Image 1 (cartoon, rainbow, N blue to C red):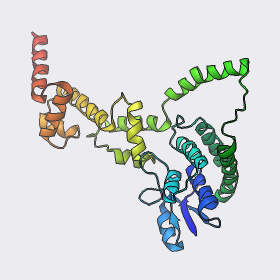
Image 2: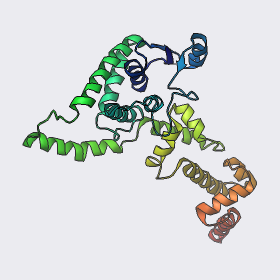
Image 3: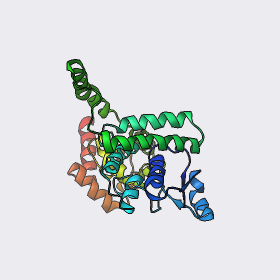
Image 4: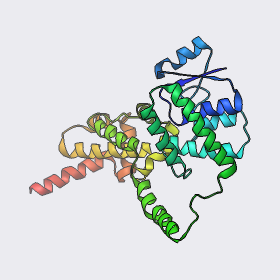
Length: 286
């Protein structure tokens, strides 16, 4: 049986082939091709595509393709569930899912940097996942550190301060997204969650869930609407545009939509807000 996915695999796209060969089809052939060729080559070769949008074997809800394989093939194994949490955390930059996730991500990022041959990387990755499975099945309760006084103190410092500060650091996708939104401020702010997820190559469900952590505790939609209203207020005070023109320039679908969102954000209608601005300017000029 043939399986096909995007080239340059790292975490999930190595975990899935390991799972296929160890628990589904031992002689499975794994094929890596450029992203834009996956579906075409899948048809040509009679291969099943995985870990890309709009195919069966891919991310679902807040879970990875590895999770879907386990669910689809009804693999009842506690050790696999432990590995799934680690893979999910490493692949979605959620290291709180499992303490081993950060290490797994670091290992495969380094290996992908050093090894350019995808099949060579896969073979080494399968050996690593074999070791991880043995740990998850037989050794997960053992501790490398025996918690002596010095070791215990260092671990407490790590968990209380170092790990805590690291978790507050915004991931790379959040920084890229802020730049994308900033670029949109000079347009009519038509950025959608699907556009963002496509551009960043991040699962939209994951992006929707994580967005508020790095953007003022607001959902994606609420954050964009807030920026639109802020821009509208700026245009009211600095230009002679009509409210209809301002509604268009700030990306609202129509005047009533603009009025409704503006009032929700400011407790005033756009016309009432603009009148108060004009009145304030008159009072200042007296």
